[in-house]
Image 1 (cartoon, each protein chain N blue to C red):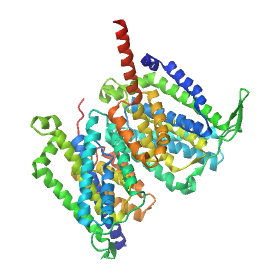
Image 2 (image 1 turned 30 degrees about the vertical axis):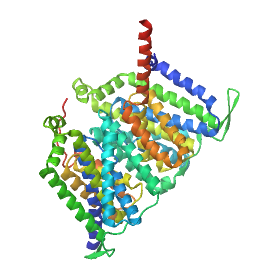
Image 3 (image 1 turned 135 degrees about the vertical axis):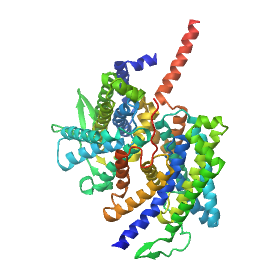
Image 4 (image 1 turned 90 degrees about the horizontal axis):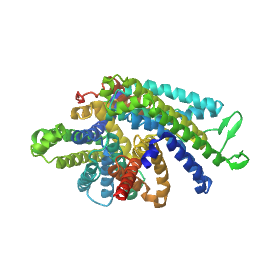
Length: 291
Length: 336
């Protein structure tokens, strides 16, 4: 009984940590530019796929990871520079469709480069599962949680301790005012996309040994991250982490105890419930609309 | 001049009718007819969606859900339970309308990204249910749908019919039927836009708060147009199911929803004829790109991005603006 519960909890927290990282990426870009980046999931795909193919070519694991993350970072910058920046005054819907176009484009390239097959990545350390009170814990889960925690702490430090981080925060609060005090807001936006891409690719790499990876893995992962961000309240970093973990655990529990067919429906029902009762998510800022 | 042409309701519909009448001269084989018939059905759906997105300014990223519900209601009612086509289509539309009303009330309080998230979720849930209720829907493998039939008279793409003494093939008959449906859909939409309801909707788009201040019941009008656009989708879904003869949960998928909203934005939000152009372009694009095989997805994404970046108002409004400034210049030059 308990071991079963523990098993679902492990699964949920692991996938939840991944959702949290994706949601943080959404939050970062949303705060800096008020764009919902539907291409966020593609950064995960790029991270996982590039690492797999580089290691297959004989590149050492660590170097492969670094290269994959750098590649995703460059992609993030290109996305902001060439797709988002030129469409400054566009509607919300137009921007959504631009990022959807970008995600289709990236997915298309991945399909040409890496094909349509599923790719398997080795666990970072041992393949030996760990027994905890009768439940089985994949050692890779520890990596996901550990790296996730490190990234969250790093992000907090980045935003509270560094000048660049504070510049991003300032831009997200008031772009005009930020520009007046000498912050190069275009640079900041680019940076936000880059950091978001880095986060996404790392998430994609650490979770790849558990979920496998393929060219189209970004769609559903990206959407789940979006759900997590909206549950937590768009724009809230804490909300993104809580939303991600909550979504992961609820999903794993309902897949285990109710029906695995309806696992994905759980995420989407949850977002509806949250939005019905808390239209700005759990931690979303109360915004007074200016008329 | 083109502007004035587009402004007039009747002339617009007549131009569209003329195009639909001339078009068969350029259609060589059944495959062309099939493509154009699909286009007409999808275009009518998008005209309905445009009422919500273009005029009331509310986003829906889950409209394929309603399209899929209509398709499956028809499929199950006519296929499994032997209902006649028209009652199935109408009852399906009423059911979908009620569902849209029930879901719409709480959802439409949301704005911007939250609204897009909520509609996306509704669409996803519908698609997941269609995928999993195998006993009813056949699951991911899909289900066959009988031909469209009125009082024993069957409209099948494989049939032979005579119209005013002319021998026509089934796929041609479907083309005529779909064309008439599209014209009716456009006519209804144009009239709605010019009615007091349409004015109320546009005021919601302009500024919801201002509309409320002058006494427009914004919540009522938003749910009304949400229901109308869902009913459009349901009716067209039913026809699509009959026309295709086979449906899978893909008709309710997220990808399909994205396709719908993209047609609206690409063609030109708030322009009824623009969104039809959007539907035509997006249905044609995969055919044109099919020659590039591997590059199809990449090109599709690229074209989507580029048009949205450089023509954020959409194809038709941008083209009309270009044409009318050119004409204006010529006129000014001639006068001087």
